[in-house]
Image 1 (cartoon, rainbow, N blue to C red):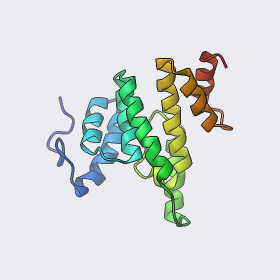
Image 2: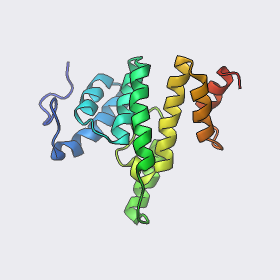
Image 3: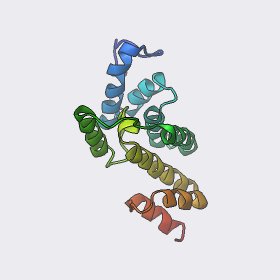
Length: 168
């Protein structure tokens, strides 16, 4: 049963107006455990944006589709590395930066859409951490080591656990 009912833009490609409503809705649905519904929305919103790709990877991880998740995460990381903040943040942007960092402290939750812009380091860390989980599940230990190196000196529990499994 669909939770979306008659919401505009679902299913089908979402317009710009619907996007502002649907993206936060998909994040909330994921947090509530309605991952299939969240996936439908994220898939509708799919574009070359690190946060959307990260959230699609989360959905694939929940479905035990680790290789598909890795494909989305590789694309997300590539795009996130290219994004820059540009100017100094305004007070409103500073608030959004702090909010994005708070939300990304748990890396297995949907990424706010503006996190790659306003908290690029944290967004890239979340992507790498989820990639570590994928690689560990698939036994890709060299890739785990490479990703762990990029996350130094920060010590994340999931990365330490994957390195222990890799024999580090």
